[in-house]
Amino acid sequence: MLASEPSVWRPLAGGTDVMVTFSAGKLSHHNFLNIWQLSELRGIVVSEKEIILGALTTYSDILSHPLVCSEFPVLAAAAAETGGVATQNRGTLGGNIMNASPAADTPPALLVYDAEVELTSLRGARWVPYCSFHTAYKQTLLAQDELLTRIRLPRSAAGMRHQFRKVGTRKAQAISKVCFAALADRHGEEIRIAFGSVGPVPLRCYRTEASIRQGQDYAASLAAELSPITDMRSTAEYRMRVAQNLLAGFLNHEQ
Amino acid sequence: MPRTLVQLQVNGVEATVAAWPMQRLLDVLRDNLHMTGVKEGCGEGECGACSVLLDGMLVNSCLVPACQADGAHITTIEGLAINGELHPVQRAFIDHGGTQCGFCTPGMIMAVVSLLQRNASPSDADIRRAIAGNLCRCTGYVGVVKSALQAHQVAGEAERESVR
Image 1 (spheres, one colour):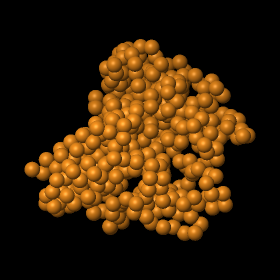
Image 2 (cartoon, helix red, strand yellow):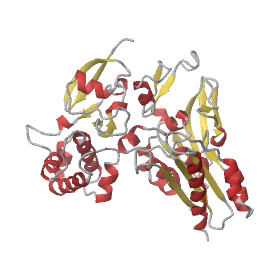
Image 3 (cartoon, helix red, strand yellow):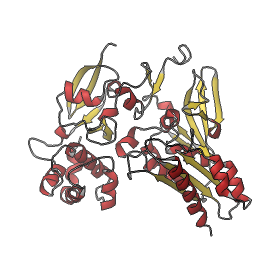
Image 4 (cartoon, chains in turn blue, yellow):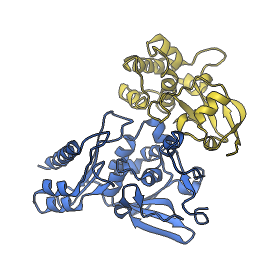
């Protein structure tokens, strides 16, 4: 259907984002393709070097999977802080990615875990590094005839020091003012940092990581890599300040 | 946009409803099936007042499209009492100050029932996490948590039996 009528059909999974804007009459789309029942898009497959999550994996699925929780604690923390239990039972990882909000909670976790996403069409399937997937505000690399089908995470982060921080107005059911995910190995040689809500897309801060590894002024690098705005939830100045504080706090645990 | 027939089981009773595919389950329950215990607080999945169990899972019914409820087993607040006898969680909310105006209460009770199905002995922290998606403007949540703690102590096996 996506191939025969490109850009007409919008996939509908758990509906936790789509139903909000649809019911408010704010969605330009009127044609929805219900994919909730597609069992091929469910399931978490564990192999020696990676785990692969179906696009319909819900937050609750993530939280009830012991290996995902132990080896990918930042993703589990993001899942636990998205909405409340009712949202977590219906919200999906694929939906969170495709809704493409820069304020989403799982993208920073997926970025620090070097995720890849599988995009499938009648033409075949391709894997794309998630760090390249979001190209501009609410825009992605997905072609009009493609469906996001799986998310792959290499099992390369087990045992790394980790942190997920979501700064918002409530403990649950809040969209973040700033969202932070970080991993560091015990020797300080490897560091991975990602933020949400401080730019038009979720951001993996490669230049800041390099500054930290080289012992340089990482605050300046971070200021250059982030582009927070002032909106209904927060101000650009607050977001930048909090982002700097979150990073400094994470790094100070090393010392 | 034509309506479609949606078949669902609500509180143990089979029902067939002509609904628009994207009609909210909340509206199907309230308007078509007269389950007005299910409340609309925000219509955005933020307040939890519309919470029901769908195939045993707590969901915000304002976010479930009717087409995805086809074939589902739904439990609403109306389905908890059996033959006029209140569910232990309902009893606890009354006895321990878990409800004031009552508007959040159906959703709040469904969230606690869902918790007790998964965790028969929840801690204070477990309960607070379980009701994190339910807003209450009256109680300050203290009475709600206390009621949930009391319900678990009294109910035991009864919860697992009485919720379908």
